[in-house]
Length: 190
Image 1: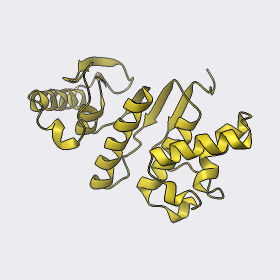
Image 2 (image 1 turned 120 degrees about the horizontal axis):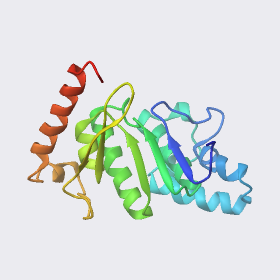
Image 3 (image 1 turned 90 degrees about the vertical axis):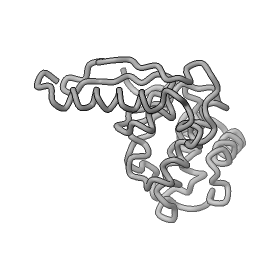
């Protein structure tokens, strides 16, 4: 299966085109897919605003912080209207404060846009905060070890990271996942 408009991808490393502005980066996929200039402008403006980069729409990637660059990548992926957003450790290189701000922003956007996200992460708190279901994989070869529903499955998501710590099952789930991580690390079959 090759690339498709039904899937958007956000990588761990920064993937914006250095020679394009924020606006031009977000419009890129739309241009390739034949959207006219007015459509591209309107769609890009919407998603640049959603990721809170309106003041930086004419900036180049080297003028942005790491968190801002990831917001450009998210806006670019969302602008193409994918059915599913694939994310590979998208916040792994960010400092802790920027990371939780990006997690809250992502959660807000995903809920508002009503979309599905499949995210790879090694961060237990990130998985518990963002996921409806956590699919725990073994290593080499990656096989499903366990599917863990979170307490929020089918409910409104917490608004802030602090709200997550108020969920009664949070500590037990955190321990369960850490136990699985330890098992996989010590199991020669994994």
